[in-house]
Amino acid sequence: MSESSEIAVVLPAALHARPAGEVVRAAAAFTATVEIRVGERSAPARSALRLMSLNAPAGTTVTVHADGDDAPGAAEAVAEVLRTAD
Image (cartoon, rainbow, N blue to C red; front, side, top):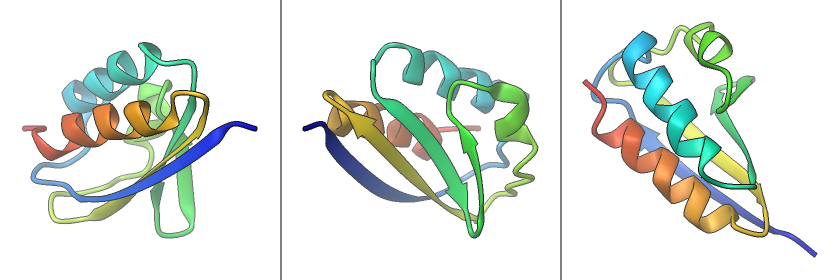
């Protein structure tokens, strides 16, 4: 059975092109499926365009959800990128 991990992060900056690209690179390093959720909306962490379509401004709380064998590490890596985005 695969693992699941979920982490809430308050964005210090809007989820625009540069941080979205960094999220994609972080997620690509893992086999887990990673998703970013903003309220009822969600986007795969491996799609910069879908991440930007979430229209998440600075101060928004997002949830990083990961499923797979390396889910905890994937969720933490993506959350760290989001915590330090500018």
